[in-house]
Image 1 (cartoon, rainbow, N blue to C red):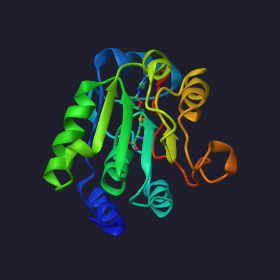
Image 2 (cartoon, rainbow, N blue to C red):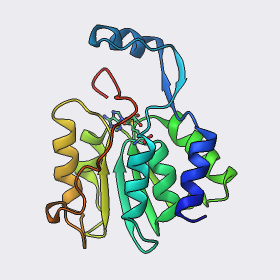
Image 3 (cartoon, helix red, strand yellow):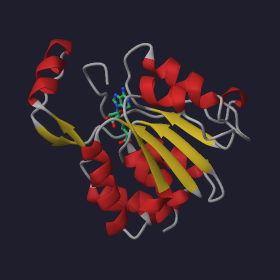
Image 4 (tube, rainbow, N blue to C red):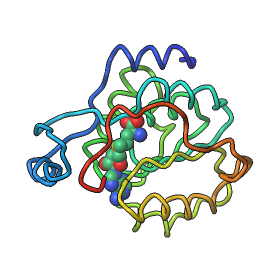
Length: 178
Ligand SMILES: C[S@@+](CC[C@H](N)C(=O)[O-])C[C@H]1O[C@@H](n2cnc3c(N)ncnc32)[C@H](O)[C@@H]1O
């Protein structure tokens, strides 16, 4: 599947990889989020997905914190993708979806657990070409995530300006510190 095919497929299918429990809904309310219990998509919007796709090539090793639409995109376009998230519900759904669209699920290594626990123990060497931080949004997670991932960056370090935050709006932000 090439870049335009996978972007079109995600836009058409609109898969719901995320889930809000009763407790998460309750914790999100004081921050102004009115959400229901159940499946939901906290994924980035089509412009961000397109930006990412335009910057990737099939020889790259990729990495992300958080999981969702971006995981499918990375898995489809990468040589290999590493994805850190703490919900097995998400990884199960993403694996199933990859199989359904004909992308070998083995192209993704899921690292399950909270990134403050998993990333300091990460031992993959300096192999990463592209990293995307979108796990827990609460301070200091994004900075910590980047600190540990940056140690494994290979050809395209964060500082060279190529891996900065993509432009365009997010569709939703995960409330409650996620
Ligand atoms: C905004 S969503 C990611 C959206 C995804 N990039 C997409 O386009 O669909 C945030 C993700 O971070 C994960 N997450 C939240 N807190 C985390 C933590 N402490 N460690 C690892 N993953 C976490 C959530 O389970 C969720 O997959």
